[in-house]
Length: 384
Image 1 (tube, helix red, strand yellow):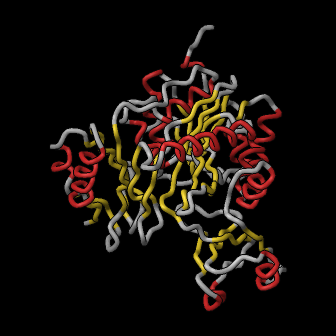
Image 2: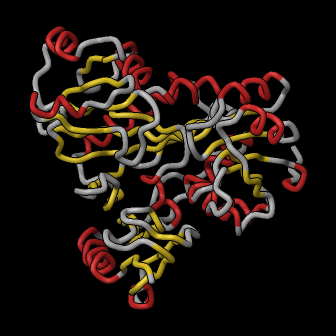
Image 3: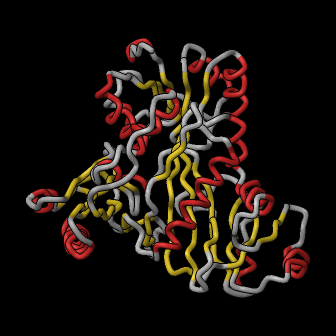
């Protein structure tokens, strides 16, 4: 079957760093991705000739932009689903499927799905606007500490809060939400699955994640995950089961908790390229970004196994700096072998804003940790 990439118009809703890395990876195939993002200074705005500034949450904007595309995909979930459903009816292929994006947009739907399909997850109860917390709490038989999560709109630590006791109930989120038992976590684990439009399915190795104590963002990611082999196998099996049950086309990141009692709880899903897969750009696997495009085009999926140990560090804006960005320490980092710097094209830094990431690869964990600590100490994202 012939393949002419210059004749294929792939639209991507969202033009941030995930879109930028997607475009960089598939440019080697002469594929030109078309981006829609409301931020005129989004990461893709200066590197793609096919960038459109527009609101991906607006029905008319998405529909008019999408009519001439062959395939539409996403790098962010908060998009207009009705427009995508309309385009799908008119013959535009949309991956992941709009009904699945809408399903995953609501985290309570995810919790219900886990229960119905015997996927282990934290015990929970929901709270709608007209319900009283006390009534729902007592009926659930859960105890403090609890974690409150907004049904919709939360990301990167936003829309999530820990409630340690009744004294913190005055600060509850007012929007529809749910409460779950706080996990006693050894480490957080992520597994990225890729499933193609031809039903081929593969998963990347598990990765383990440490979070920034203030920003609640992934700060430190290790591949392969530092967990027992049997736990790794269970995590991979759960991720493959979820992707298969959903029938998703494209990438699915499955975030999990590995708890002190040995249990695995699935936390939440992301139907797109994910921060926990950035190391695939440098560790010897076919990257998550390339495999996502392969999957939506129905091309054979690439190798998901690494040949190098890797640690990934998010490069976050320093806490007391806002303004035009300056990266201190890049030269010192690039003097060392095995350190790869990826910047996201953001001209303005803010406290804890994701400005890039560094991947450190090596023959073993100790070598990677040594270099990762050097990067954390040396490379600082500040402003004038």
